[in-house]
Length: 408
Image (cartoon, rainbow, N blue to C red; front, side, top):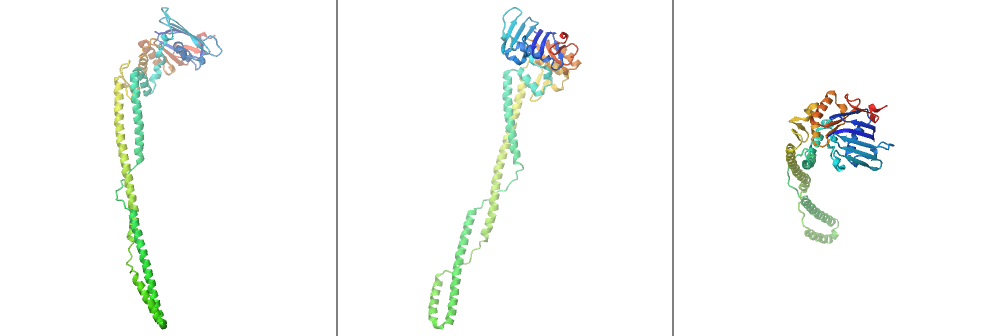
């Protein structure tokens, strides 16, 4: 089923346009802002339900706003628009039976597919479009795999960043820790011992000086010798009570040990940190290898899924970033082959109303446009082509919202 006639009044940029549609290619041409897109937009407005239009689609200040669409199968759709209110829909079928919006839903499915735009999409966008044709179950599985792949790639980037953060990890030789507190305690005991010995020495030296003074006093004061001798005897007695001091201990080894202990213990801490970092780095490396393996498995599964997807278009295969047709990269196809395949993709929707929209018809040269017409005949689809300017010679030209031939 195709469109036979389309009448549009006061919708967006259109004042009044009536198109008696050709079977396969209808080229709508004109300058920018002339109303070309408004003519083509009126098709989904007529068929797509109340949600497809709003008050902004209506020409301001005009009272009569309607679209009438007639198909070659005798179906007539009339839709009248009212500002602020729901449109009035009237459907007349060929056999006179009643029909409503439910009968129109999905009728223009392929019209939203632009084959020329598809042929110029990046491979990733083309693949997303094709995946919709494979059905919701396939799309759900692809989405699930893509989510897993994205999550693993994200974690993999973080792991790689952490590995890079370590830089060049130089090894540190192990060392036995030194008990600084024990050395300090030994040093303290030795210094206390030496202080005690110095006190003893000072006391002995003092007593010895006093003995000498006593001897001098004996010589000077012979008349007081007995007193001095008694005093001397007493001093000797005291001297005998004082132990003889021993040789002082050498504290230099303790100072040397303390100096070395700090350096050794610093090496111990460095080695501990090195071992911890080495362990963390090894764990990150193992995790990265696991992620690489998982990512490869998921990508292989996604590739197998794409290879086994059931599509209504034969010869189509793809992986994450490449679309192939019969074994050839889509990007390597000629412009004609790309358009031909793209129209086949649109036709695969099997919509009852066999119409498709081409928005950038100005991008087609004369030869490409003729090939597009031939493809429309081959697929038995009706193409509605929007072209800026005068078109390709047999167009329906719009000027200020009206057909060119209708202007006075």
